[in-house]
Image 1 (cartoon, rainbow, N blue to C red):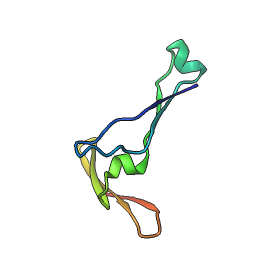
Image 2 (cartoon, one colour):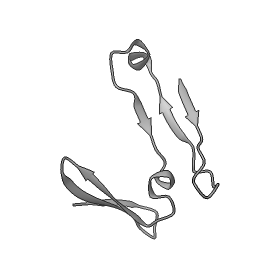
Image 3 (cartoon, helix red, strand yellow):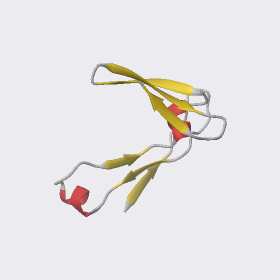
Length: 72
């Protein structure tokens, strides 16, 4: 089962759907909920974003060929 949500950005644009999947384990409360975010939602029209994870800074970048690259 999945739950679809759609939110509006500050400029009124609607980002791609964000899907939250809930499987048997999640429904029973024994495991974490799996989340799926579209790259358009994460990048919000930019070519790259920075992500801090465990105190380290990473760059998530979209290439011209539509690939994603994560670098430290």
